[in-house]
Image 1 (tube, helix red, strand yellow):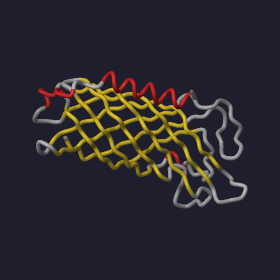
Image 2 (cartoon, helix red, strand yellow):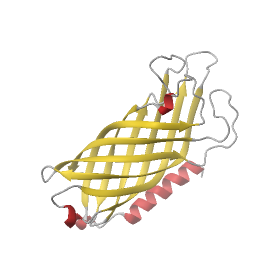
Image 3 (tube, helix red, strand yellow):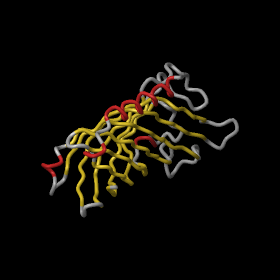
Length: 207
């Protein structure tokens, strides 16, 4: 079993063990829009304009199960154009896609019944890094899937019994990438490294 598959199995197992009993669970689906920003990476920036450090649109969805204090969530997100900038055409296609399973620690539900409910989240999963250019041979050609960790905090509140809003700030960071890769064919200088912050707002639906 390779490292990525093992990571996915561990995350899924942790979510299954940590999931609260159904009768006591606040079950939620969240669709979100936000921005990925402050990126830092050792992968080659062909634009030479710090494209990863710029703000990029982030879209995704979460499924969350929250008990009185503890819970879990599954987060799936995509950041298109992560290695691209408006004034450079050296990179024609790029994105960072993440799938994460996380443990959640929230304020007790009874404390936040009529206000925002704060929570902290942390876990891990997999990150897919994609970057390519139109030249033949290409200046960059990256397609990597590696383990990652994520952590952050947020707040959520409900407008009605079923529908609400949430806001979240979360950091994503690649871990355990291949070490000391040469800067060849769009790979990284030294050990693989990629991290960024994501801020988003979500529409929350209870079911």
